[in-house]
Length: 358
Image (cartoon, rainbow, N blue to C red; front, side, top):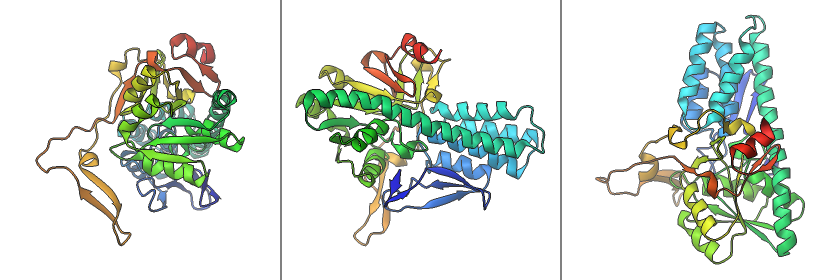
């Protein structure tokens, strides 16, 4: 997708310089910085500090992290230790482990002379597959938006939470892909963008990328969605997911569950967009999903431009206050209208998912 009219992806391999390049998302929307990753430590740090984020992009970064590890040291013991450190860097997004496991399986019988070549090809393939998956998610979700538009004959108002846009994937996004496809087809859409505290990823990233693609959008406070639904100003919700169980339960950014409850109460369709790499076929009880708790400073401080347009971080909470920063919640399948995947749309259930993928 585009930034200032130029096509980008969120991560790519610079063959000339033999390095991985990313868009540093901690600096958006105020600064656009391309960062170079040259070591496995760089890749792990980029994931931990959320220079890259979003389940599919974390997976792509992990794949390239294995490549960087091999470039440092192609001994099997070093590569295995690097893979373990990658998996530990962020626990909730299942694409991370999926990508690392896939890379390690691919490399299991490869000799040292070929291992870098094979790893690089596989990392590129993982990223290319994600682009295609997200494009197909968009085409499948487009049909839902078209149906609403054909009935309404007016702008389709879509509410989304956090950033499940192209910045969270390699390209297109998951939740935003149907929106981008609808926009390209000339269907009038407008997006309600939850600011998504504590890191404001909706305001800072989703609105930013929608602006760059000239998709009409409005940032709202996280607690505004309910009244908009009561007023009939939301036609559908589309969110992404960091891990979806085979049962249809959806783990996503904190606050997603509350949006699903409001949508259910107001008969607003609530869809979740995901590639198959985000499905966890093993865990059956959502209480067993590892839920990340992050630095309290994400809540206590905010970052923005001062009057001199310099980035500043300031404390907004009482210094003596206790803070708990849970990063994700789980929306039970009963509140999900459907899952939009690269293979089609299905009900949020084991039967629905197995009908597409098994």
